[in-house]
Length: 99
Image (tube, rainbow, N blue to C red; front, side, top):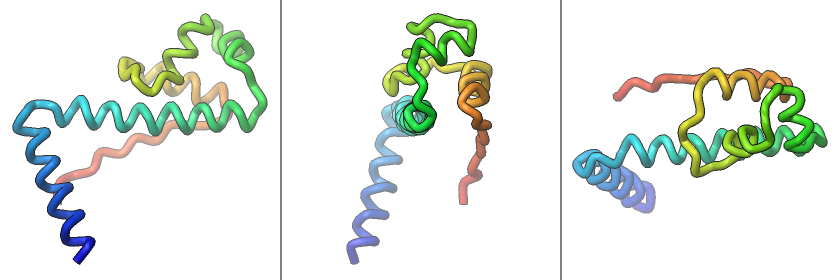
């Protein structure tokens, strides 16, 4: 019963966001939160500072802070891949087809 309610809520919410033209923005925000959290966790695990990572990437601390800002969705794939590589990671993007 609880799963049915959750599924109905998800479907209704998604439909509403699409109708209002907001779905893409909400999806991008959610993805950026996940990406920022994963990169932050990796940086902390490695014991790196923002300054050290900026130096490694050959960029400014402000640019690195934008990568880690969960509200800033204007992250390019190049910047994401370079940042991940500097942290010893790689990026995997998956396009999920509708059912």
